Image (tube, rainbow, N blue to C red; front, side, top):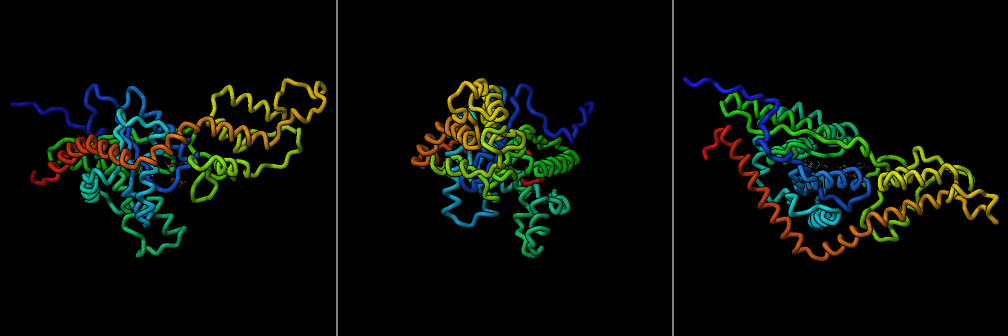
Length: 370
Ligand code: ADP
Ligand code: TRP
């Protein structure tokens, strides 16, 4: 008589194989030119994580998700290349990280359907993008696209298909991660009841609290939709115009500037080491370029004054410094589409191997004849 093994814990989901690295996965919608908020809030932390020695990174371009909003095929294609070039230019290593686009691994749509069968409508109606469409945008329920409602299901499929342990996302995606966890648990409960054990790994969100919301030029969250974004890969002149046009409070020249709550300072700090940030803070508080020099020591003390123009120039210089190499690499990559396409296809082949294994497990638990 065989003794029954331990009862699998559905909440924990499918366990990570012993010795395997944590799988970190994130997706990015190809919508428009990325801005500094995207970079600091999402791209930089995701790349830092993906490049860690103890991490198995998956990164993909969510072109199916983009279709919920983008209906110009030329633009969608262009943005897909652009987002690929952006992430590569900013430090994704395609050897180390599995880098692909969603529509190159269509197993995801099959899994999304299966997950749909386990997803109560109530879970989706509570989704904030649905509420936003119905309550704020005045969209009639009958006109609401099915994709807006089922967006989180496809996103859950993106995550669950690849056995992700950790999903680094912005705060705005927290709810989507909770939905993915809930769907995974429901499928696991079903699979366990059917005698299959858990078939999906339950992922966890990772939200970098420190840079949760990057401020935009008028203080509000930096966002394409608010028109307050600094584009990463615009021309030098565009970058300069953007930074120089930031509205600042009126402070008499030579009087201290308050770094607290100032968007220029906040952005500078996010792009700098603590030493450089401390030096800038001292300049703000003293309103002097070199706070160690006494006014009396100068023929014209105003040459040492530090005003908003200097604060803007400090940020601009920092942006050009930090982003300079990436800006060049981006241009180089955008001029070589065939290379980008080939790279994404290689990534998709690696991703598909994982996708087929997961889908096989789930299909068996559903009773699809192999
Ligand atoms: P936008 O608000 O400009 O439309 P997206 O919604 O395309 O930006 O955001 C893409 C990613 O960048 C998301 O993960 C989002 O959380 C992150 N992100 C965008 N803006 C900011 C911001 N101001 N601060 C922090 N993260 C941001
Ligand atoms: N919804 C995410 C966004 O708007 C993009 C996304 C799609 C995603 N699928 C994902 C993010 C899976 C993380 C994991 O930014």
